[in-house]
Length: 187
Image (cartoon, rainbow, N blue to C red; front, side, top):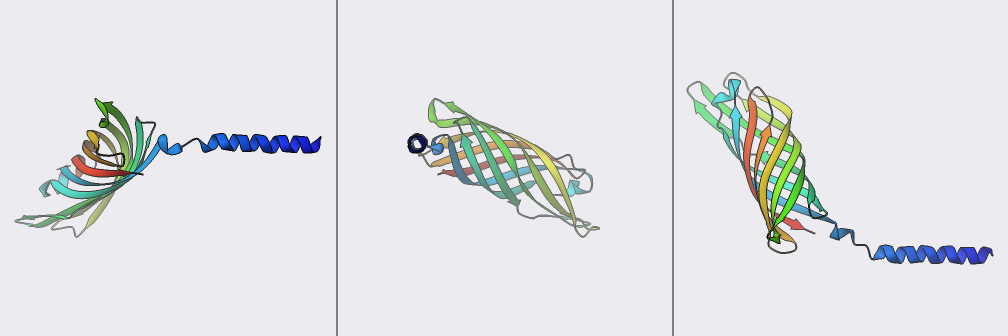
């Protein structure tokens, strides 16, 4: 009797594993990596109002698209330093950001073309330098919202263009308006 139960147990485990082998999680969860060029327009205030308001940045992304309509993406973004020369001296600024965005995908016409919407949070670290202040850093969590389009060239390669608004609420930097363009590689 014990041998019969043992054989029945082993057979049911093997049958369950055979069924599980047919499940391909890559069909429902599609991991990807990406790289973006980012143009940012900053709204400065306070002592920073003399800063240049446009930045060129690079961003790298790591994400997963789930069930064709949702996605989750982590990113890291770094801007170049901007210098403004005024009569009273040099004003310098730069920023970096990292965070997490949730994406919604809506296929249009064919499955290769998608409208995108995103909501997310990011930590922004801004560095300022004024004529009377050598250097000052500020960190702030920003709220992000964006819309855009994505076109899948192939099963693995896609191009994306997004417009994004980020609210920071700092005394020196209130918000950022960004346009991004980049590529994604899906595994």
